[in-house]
Image 1 (cartoon, rainbow, N blue to C red):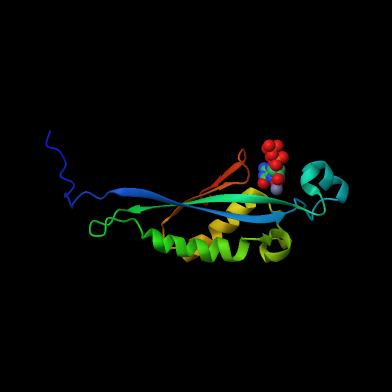
Image 2 (tube, helix red, strand yellow):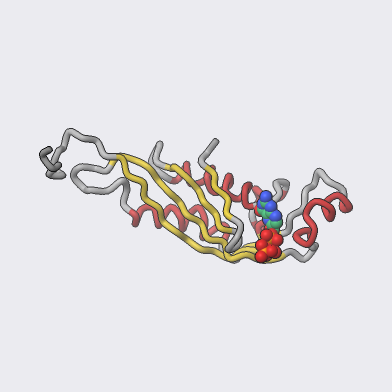
Length: 148
Ligand SMILES: Nc1nc2c(c(=O)[nH]1)N=C([C@H](O)[C@H](O)COP(=O)(O)OP(=O)(O)OP(=O)(O)O)CN2
Ligand SMILES: [Zn+2]
């Protein structure tokens, strides 16, 4: 069978590219819809009134056609700029519950953080490219969100 020369311009190739970014933030797991007792019951030590910190690691994955001319799904330099705008500026070295208005009445779980990042990243990226937000809250806790 003839080997693909890689120059077959007719074939559309779909690629997935991911950029990884770490940031540090603190938070407290506390729901306004629960009593103080219920919050302690549900969130345990994570309901500590003084909060706690994480070094979050976020993986932003985009999916799209590999441009036959540039060879790119999108320029990773542009993705880096979107991450700076959507993640680093609003979230790095912040108190998620006090510095980020979204979390004033949304519990700052990693699931909700992934939704927050998705909702803002999808506005910053070109249409239909965002595929997945994957957040490592600790070495053992990982959350994936794909916009569902
Ligand atoms: N579904 C979720 N459960 C928990 C979340 C979350 O975001 N979604 N978050 C927490 C806390 O934020 C906590 O900081 C992480 O909990 P934990 O796994 O206990 O982490 P530790 O630092 O204690 O490390 P381990 O080695 O894993 O014990 C809790 N639950
Ligand atoms: Zn936490």
